[in-house]
Length: 139
Image 1: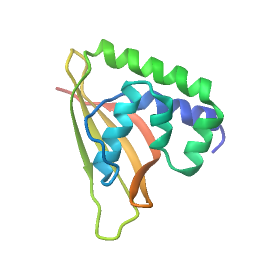
Image 2: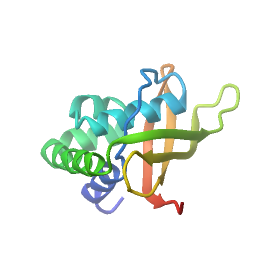
Image 3: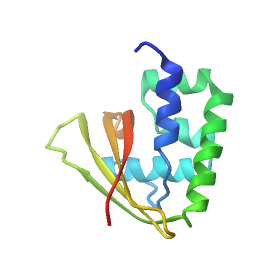
Image 4: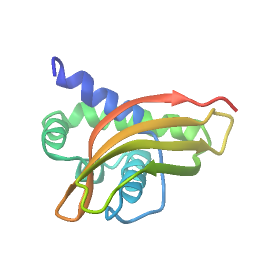
């Protein structure tokens, strides 16, 4: 990775969501918890959903990550909050990684978005290993 700062900024910028799940036991639950920590701009909870090198990078750039979390929170608030999250992560028996999308639907006028995430299983918990840019979804 040429510029880790750009990657962590991208991760923060694209993770603009909320949810109600309290379980990292499934990829969908981990994604929802991750997005909820983004909406609340809670740095400790946000980093707790990251895997290894990504977590280390975020912790080494706390001020930058916190600023981006705040910006994400402002965007979510302007969109009226989250109406619904729908995740599509296929996991076969014994799998330790998966990738897929979470569809984010906002309560306000903002268009829905799809967020790519790659997750890895670590000690029974699923953690975010990689994130891609949001993709706007046409109504």
